[in-house]
Amino acid sequence: MKPLSDIATRLRLASGLVLMAFVAGHLVNHALTLHSLEAVSAGRVVFSAVWRSLPGTILLYGALLIHIALSLFKLYQRRRLRMPLWEMGQIALGLAIPFWLVLHVLGTRAVHELFGVNDSYLLQFGWVWGGNASGMTIMLLLVWAHGCVGLHFWLRIRPWYAAVRPYLMAMALVMPVMALAGFHLGGREIQAIAEHDPNWLARIAAEQNWPDDNVQSWIQAWEGRVLGGLILLLAVVVMARMLRDFRERAAGQVEISYIDGSSVSIEPGMTVLDGSRLAGIAHAAVCGGRGRCSTCRVRIGAGADHLPPPADDELKVLNRIGASDRIRLACQLRPMQALEVAPLLPATAGPASSRVQVDPAAGVEREVAVLFADLRAFTRMAEGRLPFDVVFILNQYFKAMGAAIEDTGGRVDKFIGDGIMALFGIDAAPSVACRQALLAAKAMAHRLEDLNQDMKADLPEPLRIGMGLHVGPVILGEMGYHRATSLTAIGDPVNVASRLETLTKDFNAQLVVSAHLARRAGLDLGAFESQDIDIRGRQRPLRVHIVADAASLPGSNDEWRQSTLPRFSVSSLFPRIKR
Ligand code: FES
Image (cartoon, rainbow, N blue to C red):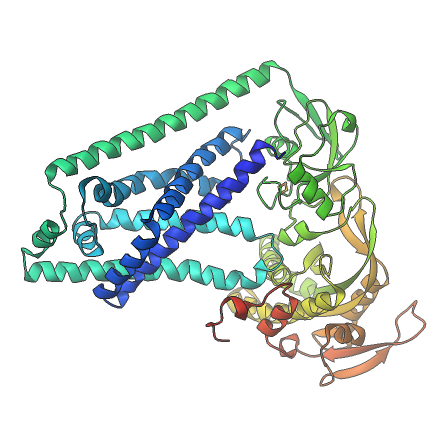
């Protein structure tokens, strides 16, 4: 049987999706005003037929009540209010929504059901535009932003998400903009009609049975009651938290020791991730502690015998990454006695790390594509500059290159001085990994051009890079010492990729890629110069392609990206999007 918190998480997600579907329909309806008032009225009929039917009503209001109740439950469950900024923002948005939403619901659905008002768009536009247009705008933006943030953090660990993210983000921006434009256009049209015919609004109101002043007072009274009730519920949750914390504190503390020698005392019932946050220990948690991404995984030292076994959902995630018995998810682990842990991924681990299917402590052999990149002549460029400037430039560079690598499905393994090592294929087939690596090289070249443009005023000359790419079997594993421990790869392909990067200087090229990698990617790089080169330690020469400008690699980003999608293509999702 699933623990209550797992069921709650799923229900909260499902109810959130229902609410998002409702809000998206609402936005589309508003946007129809850009066509005509007749179009929005027709859209309204369809919208009402769905959401005001008995099943639609049960689904919508059931989802709303469940979502509110479970969000309060989640607030109670959370041991510490210390959390990443995005999560804090999402909670704040969620708490603000009722203060704008209640009046809207009372003034539409409630008066429709109780007083027989036909709350048509015409009437709503007339009243809202004349009175509370800014309130409506704020409400719409709050609800949409809350939903979009929730969806983003739910989807970000999916392997296909990086490919569709630009389209989803565009939709997330375009939909409210069109809806607001429609809303404002409709309001102005109604205003113009009302100015031309001063009795028009009153006539429509009478025709559609808009309530008298008594009903207006009723709406206001109920708004106060509903909001008061919600505030009371919130207060109950806060008090329940305080009571629980008091009881647990009285029961004693549990000591968590980390591999680097730091430690923290937590109350029984708190998770190891709570402990890390409490102690200010940087700890990866891509899904924000929801037990889905696996990036918070820790290796258990002393104290393992006293731990409760993992619940079904935690077990599923642990099985997915092939973890041994000593690996647990810090966000799900609630030790009741002293425990030693070692976080296994660097605190900077991104969504790609959630798909690392190895037990890093044990090590595993895997065929991966390795990319090395290095800035050319940066040491000379850094001479004579303020340290602050150097750090600023390098961080801008790392940000742009790191994003290009992650967006194409790779994982930054490490930054070495001004160099970068990245791996592709930790969670994908080698052929896909090779395409991803070439796509990353191309994306990095483009982003470097953009960066040089943006920083023209700060740079004495444009930044230049050299990149080396090779593929082959490596040993992946957790290596290092104390805080410097991380998942990395060792093996011949790593040395070869590094060597190819060095050769870019001799060839005065931006990229040197092994012909083996190009073949595995299924790409014909015959148009580029080829050479056989000797690599120390290898018996036979290695054939390589020399690419002067990686931005000129063949194929469009989208074509390549589609070929790395595991189950569907972008065009199958959005067939009307033109490339
Ligand atoms: S933070 Fe994502 S599984 Fe623990």
